[in-house]
Length: 394
Image 1 (spheres, rainbow, N blue to C red):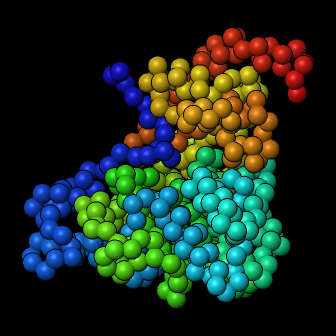
Image 2 (cartoon, helix red, strand yellow):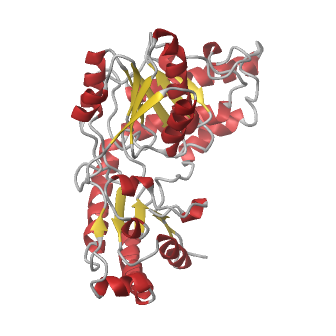
Image 3 (tube, one colour):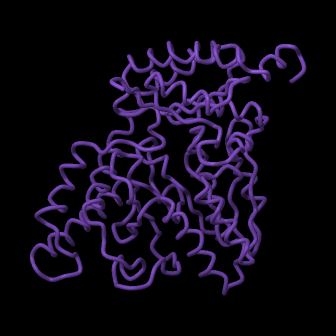
């Protein structure tokens, strides 16, 4: 395939030239183990600490509050399990989260519930937003932690994080946010936003896969994630992935410095994409139109199967994601789309298009020219679409 229109930046991004250039010395010349004492080892250790400063500055934290992890999923696991296991001895055995979190949160919450912890799953509105009043109502004396994602990974809606954080602070409850999809798309400042713990990942912002970080506010105590050596101040053992950590630092610095410019460039492209696709008969925009990141467009097309849509788009050189989870081995539609009230048959026909730094106006035009005939072809073959038009289905 000679031509690729990449519209799946919420899934992963390419490593940027600046990130790669920063990483290369630590794969070749500066390959020392950061725990050793000789020159190239001290150089590697210094590079890790520079990256820690870069990540901290990007979210308004102190460098000593940043702990490097293998990915965002690891950071989410550590935040939830670390807090609940630590506070269990104080009778704090209750977790509050939402029904449309990433599975890194939902599966961790399920695991905790099997250990005897209690979990409250807050509903979300049809627009894909969490009501802070629901958080306040759900908090009880034994609540240890509230975890609400900053930006939803499928529909791109931006949650009222600062309001939720203020409620948690007033109640004396710790607040964690999965900000994997937020870094580089919104301005984050953990202090004013009352965030106690925050997860982020490198490969969403042009760093490599396999590196992330967890912000832990000073004074918040968690159980260690992994025992062994003294790395990450004794909380996460294991020789550090120096090159990737360096790349993460550069990527966070770059992403956070360019939030406004990125949004100013992508918002018109996103709006053109949404407006063009909404011209398709019965197309539905998933998530709030305005309170969403500039890179995200998620729509449903009744009478269409998401997996078939993805395969036909791929044949035309368009890379995207579907609201259907078929490609992950499940026959169930997206839990996010079900949480905002979509029926199964509608959720199965959903498409997420996520723009990025390389997206051009020509890419958007190509997608708008490509999708409508594919939708028509799939609907012409669909018994569901036929029955919908016959009035047999709502």
